[in-house]
Length: 497
Ligand code: MSP
Image (cartoon, rainbow, N blue to C red):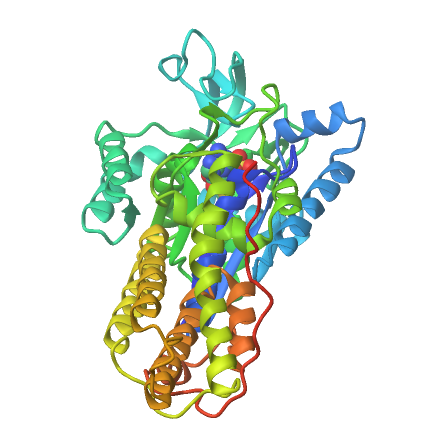
């Protein structure tokens, strides 16, 4: 079976990573971890987009050569991902020699098939978006994303016959052979396609920092064409084609849902199966921007909270397809409420009781009051993750946590009149629930999942075969007779700030 292929956009290295980049990359990591856990081989790709005028301009501002500049920032992206324990299988850089060769071959093949012709591009270009613009895309003459006036270009350029593919792409989206989610984004692409497509310039004559066009070295390849091909460079030698999920937000929807499929159709390559357009973050109600000084830096977040806290917060608090407004207050409240009071408290209570009433040994027996519920929650969580409904998945997990906490309040194992058999049954059952919880939490909160498993003396791994996975998610008294350890409090309460 081919590897399950997940991609993030490759990020521009004009600046260091921020919350938005982190969000997409974490989503990819959750999916990758989920599939490894449930028995699939995975290929998870991320990386950096390093060519083009925007990056050359940033390098110049820093008085560095473009290469030295991109080496530095690309490395910073990689280091941030490592600090978040992002399990990418490949980190691609568009300045790699291997990628440069693949891009040139891709373009040569497009030309050989008659999809490229020479013309003249005369119109607008926003360097911030690295995108050709129409007057109708502007607001008060400015690019609405970058608040800057686009440049006027009039230069010879090579064009790709994008217009030839509008109908074909529409029908592939219609039939869901190319799935675009959420539905609203799918409709947006379909409506855009229904008015037909114009050919797109794929080369720049006056941008030096780029990959030379193989048959005309006076042009470099338009940075977006170069960038999209990264998925192909990385996927080429690995048994993973086509992509199962391309993840991104709305800013780059058209490139991925229109130009990219057309490029693949032109070379008769398989199209991605699905594209997910997640929401866009603002911070305290405003667009993140350097000039407002409100850019949320992933390293700054780690100074305040452990990575698991940030991971679960971002995906529990904001539905994956909807825009979200980040604030530190929300994060603080989430931490004390759902992590300290609910999840942390549950694990602590159960293990302390097991220690106190059963000498720290998982007792025989084990009731089945919670079994059906737990298994239901676990199944639903799994289905939701596979639909990329991470928020729903976490809602299931946290309802189970609340339910277990209520169950503990109800059965009152601490009541002096309890028989030991009743206590044993209750403890064994709660331990089994927590074991299931550790498995369900693994993709989203890997450190916490491992900490919980460790306290239970349960050997939780990051990847299993399908059969092994089926075995560990069966309900039973899996840990009977094992010695448990009472962990340190997982999420100590903090003063509200
Ligand atoms: N280099 C191109 C992508 C090429 S892919 C072949 C690019 N880079 S980017 O650095 O601008 O990254 C854009 C992506 O970063 C978005 O599509 C999204 O995945 C993530 N985010 C950037 N800002 C974001 C928010 N404010 N909110 C959520 N995610 C956003 O475009």
